[in-house]
Length: 280
Ligand code: SAM
Image 1 (cartoon, rainbow, N blue to C red):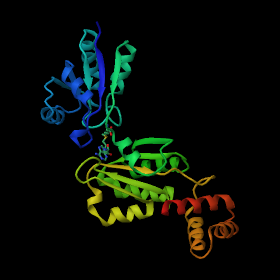
Image 2 (cartoon, rainbow, N blue to C red):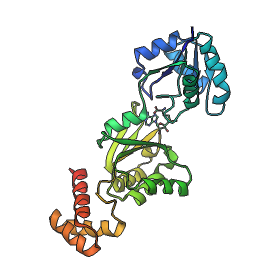
Image 3 (cartoon, rainbow, N blue to C red):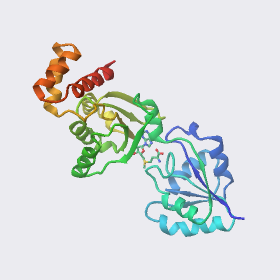
Image 4 (tube, rainbow, N blue to C red):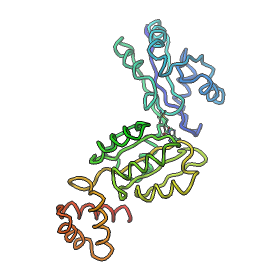
């Protein structure tokens, strides 16, 4: 009888988030493929999981596939975990799962923590439709180009970001999406210093720049989608509308801004309305 391949989620910080089912599966399978044996070894020790481990990471996944799926074909149940959270979510495993399906092996998900979902459900931004972008390119030019492509995306966007790049990433987001775009920084989720900051991109970058603690640890950025019906305003139009909103009611400000900028009144009205919703 062929065995099964279990894809098992592990905690993203708080060990109490380990599910009973995940613990049972990891204790009962014959082998666990892990990203880093030392890292998972510590977690497994703390949770009384004594199952043998085998490293399977980005650099050896292809060669490990034969070994791992060979064991499954011979009848062993095996599991895949990543360092934290759900395997394959910005983590290795895709080729293994794809090959398992190609060989008729049953793949069983054991769902649990993932930073993308923990951040999304606590961000206070629309969740009915969202786009997970994972990590943005590390180089500034490529990152800005990717963000430009996403500037008119209407769905909520979720990004993973390294702490040493958080300030430049927020600056690029502000430049591409505008300073009034709603966003939430979700840091150290489920851990002691868990911090969730909902703000506009403009306010968020001020906060992160002025507080070095916000530039540490593990970070997810959730960014609201483009709300205006025909796309974001450019910086000049945004400034004009803001000045008018300081003096006039929303409808009048939008109408006058439309005359000054030549943009559609609806676009300006919707944008101003979305700013007001963020503040409320
Ligand atoms: N597979 C993992 C998951 O399901 O979330 C993600 C792995 S990815 C290599 C690591 C990134 O996830 C971190 O750089 C950070 O952006 C995000 N992340 C993981 N744990 C987190 C936490 N506790 N709080 C905030 N972000 C976290």
